[in-house]
Image (tube, rainbow, N blue to C red):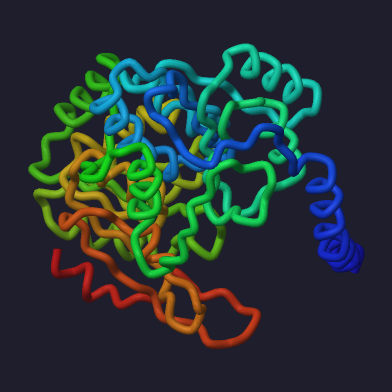
Amino acid sequence: MLSKINRRFQDWARPKRLSIGRYLWDRKKNKIDKIDMGKVKKILFLRYDGKIGDMIINTFMFREIKKVYPDIEIAVVARGANRQIIENNPNVDKIYEYDKSNKKLKKLSEEIRKENYDLLIDFSEMLRVKQMKFINLCRARQNMGINKKEWNLFDINIDYKEDKKHITNRYAEVLKLMGIDKADLSYDIYLTEKQENLGKSFRESIPEKNLFALNPYGASKYRTFNREKILEIGKKILGDSESALTFIFSPEKKKEVEIIAKELGERVYLCEEIKGIMDSAAILKYSDLIITTDTSIVHLGVALDKNMIAVYRSDEGTGEYNSIVWGPNSDKVRMIYSEPNFIEGEEADINKFKFEIVEEV
């Protein structure tokens, strides 16, 4: 009951907070509505959402900018695990760590302001008050946003309404404003030597001909395989005596995976040395096929140019095009859709898909 009341209160208060936030922070002096790349020496990308998949997609932008403008300094504001994606990327010159605490946010904006960035690029569909404040306090010479026409905070707006096209098309529009018209939309992942050795030695320790990497966990319980589905997929893979199975998972799922691995029996291998997403990337690089329900692993697999089965919930009846916009940008990926759910207020179940499709692999 209390949670329901709190949810209703938050729904009521949210637009009022945003209105106050815009009144305080949606402003900018000396707006410049066109980019002169001859004057751009430093670009700041904002990826403070912490999303790993989004950061992976952004990597093609860093590379393409450096191709045309090698002397431009590229900095990125990252958060949490998505920082790991670019720590070894040669096209990123500087990384800032975003923290939501007011004290650290103020300190970070002051540090950034001293660097005098020429162009700040924000990809947020909806800005929260702290993000408005942060952009305002960074004091970049120009701020660019997507679908922010009515905002005073942004000098440059990209009016993008193509909701049935892949997300790379949206980001390519940003590059076009910089004079980069024919961008290579492939993603980049750079492993350290240690990570490379981890993936290679793990694979060499497995005698079976084929190694399948299964990532059963998504961003929510509605995008996560249940125990029955994991066992079903695992048993099918292990039905072939020349195939082995490993799991990709976050640390909090370790005990659960160990129990499932024990139940599946022989030819299930878990890498005990994985400590982050880039260690997982190393395991994926040396796997023969990836099966995943999580889009961050989908994008990681695409960056690694791997064969993959990606399971998505059906867009049918939702009015959205998530599987198109955030789908795999590769012809090496087979997409499988779960059954749609037309009951209002209920989420579709990712586990309801025909397993016979997977059996063809």
